[in-house]
Length: 332
Image 1 (spheres, rainbow, N blue to C red):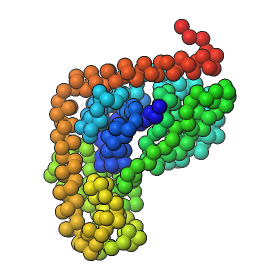
Image 2: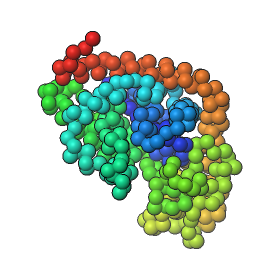
Image 3: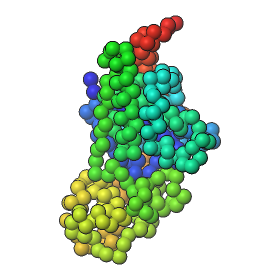
Image 4: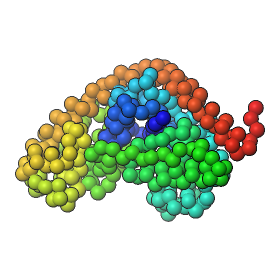
């Protein structure tokens, strides 16, 4: 059996980077794997949340999944907090994860910054909860971006440590999948920084909820340089803003950067941006419209999440009970 597990946090709006780097690839994966797609709302609690905003964000991310093409009947689609086994297994795994392993996690150092002593325990233990998310379903493959690859390596280490401790092959060692031309979409305002929900400038990203006019405006205002597009990828990589826009075009068009460079070599950015606007609107506007329709019926989104949560809980309960038997805990 090959099983995919992946999820996104319901923090602020999903953007083009989330779509190209992950969500679009999930749509393809559902044709080849048994897939479990999660809205990881417990992870979102590592930063301060307004309860009502968080509830709406959970629904918005769910709507984005479905609008992009995830089939909630074919796949398991649910929010993490519906299944208490995520938290329970996280505690069990934390008792098998040396602190030294967590101290090596670069993302905690980046997010905590100089206020490390004031950071909450959840942010520090985030990678163990991520490991529990994956291992609770005995997932064999996890589509990840480069920034999450270290966390997946930790999940593999924890799974291996558990298996060795109890002389079992219970947990599979999940394999990373880094897919597509746009594994790392950069800011439209700074080609050296990753596109981010937390960037203060709305013009740094294209949100999944942006309408056609907003998408067009943001692309036209995207930072470039005065030179025409180069004729080789090697030259393109020396120009981060140009490279980012070409990468976005390639990902949306299903082409390689080499093909896009050959097509637009020597063109001015005004012409290239016009072509990118047409392509982005054609690909993204239908998703935005579908999201809007879905969000008009919150009760239906909640129903789909409950249905998916019940399916996820059935798998999780069996695996967690097996874990308890292995480590010596009594069950009711």
